[in-house]
Image 1 (cartoon, protein in one colour):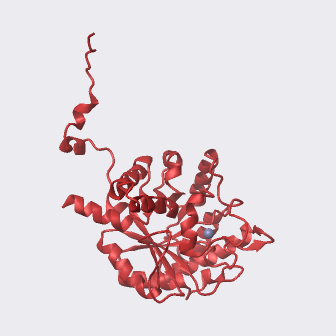
Image 2 (spheres, rainbow, N blue to C red; image 1 turned 90 degrees about the horizontal axis):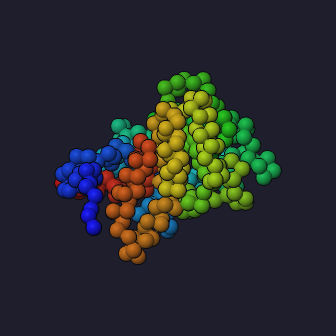
Image 3 (spheres, rainbow, N blue to C red; image 1 turned 30 degrees about the vertical axis):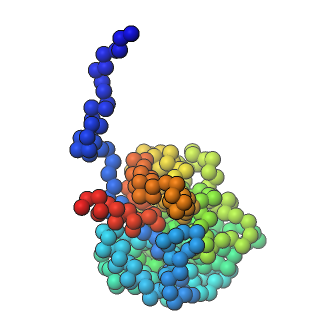
Length: 329
Ligand SMILES: [Zn+2]
């Protein structure tokens, strides 16, 4: 038996660490990350989220300090979620100029002016029923919610936010917010759209963190069906046409194909949200000693980049920044 002459041998370029590094196609940097922060108006001290070890809800008084810690690790942006003391049927806390997110925006910008402060722009944390807008019967009224989204986005803008990030999957939300911001004099404020957000089981731990579990039903009448790929492209294109500046796919791990397709189809910066359930699974397995947490997390983050993401919203961001620093040293 003779072996064939192998002319092409890909292993030649994997022979040592230096060569591997030279031909590496994708790299991770702290610049790629946005760190989510939950600000709770009802607490005085940080409170860890049981299903998300290492992640805490923090009081307003800690926002400045945490923002500075994020910045010191070289992470350029944060995204704020607020848990207000008072909730009502329409989520009016969302556009209260002295609301929890508005106050958090001001605190974050005061503590770290260079940090890009993004505000999740929705109503599920502000409504007493936990749905993402105004209800008519058991249905979220799209257009009435759009009017409130305009007020909320403008209020965040007045507080000094750098980017608004609507996440409620209302039809026309980007056009409505763009118009609202422009009319109020915020023509230069970018919108990062949660353009493709699926009705996902991976959001479970977030709802503990943000206190936003719907009191009845689910969000399948506005969030997308996980089975749909063509519709994801349609949603992305609609947001491009309505004036979105950046697009997001959420969740990440189960939707790598969607990240790639949206990236190829549009020319906007792409973000991916590495969601709470993805985080919780890694943490749980690592705690049991079943996986190497650092290795698995870095591999996953790199895969988001390889799939086309430019930005990664992740609860792992602080650890990733430390690991990247450690590996460089
Ligand atoms: Zn929502």
